[in-house]
Image 1 (cartoon, rainbow, N blue to C red):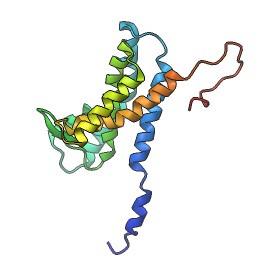
Image 2 (tube, helix red, strand yellow):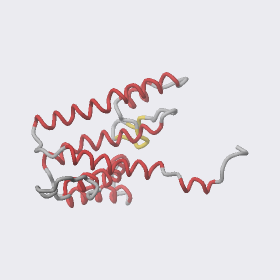
Image 3 (cartoon, one colour):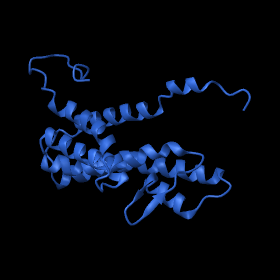
Image 4 (cartoon, rainbow, N blue to C red):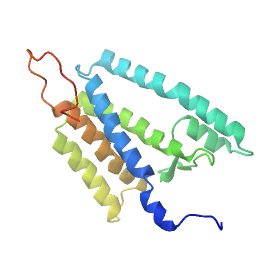
Length: 188
């Protein structure tokens, strides 16, 4: 269009960096609220809380988005409803398209994935270096064309940020017992 701003303004598009910062914060918050040992009861409680925070709002957002679209495929509606939307192809499933009028839902797909993978990290508590190494190998394997599917490479790349936030929360020493007022700002 004639009135379009200069392409140089896109240098300041902070959408992706903002999502990555959100991943750090999300991992950090999960690290703060999961201080107890992972057992069947605590893991179930964790899943119920995540479900209650995400599913009702996501259902409303996807429903409204579908109502406002002239045409939406069943695959796109169902995929977005179950947080499977992604531009990368799932092995054996293919791609699940983003809703045209709400493409930012892609980040919820990643967040749900990290919430679920976190259960394994919480349960088995691997060292932080081990998680970082695994994520790094997946990212490098995809980047160098070593047969790692794009979807895994992307999840691993964002996972660096999510699990960095988690590591900050879990590896920050607790405050001294006689400390009256303590916030998490030093860790942040």
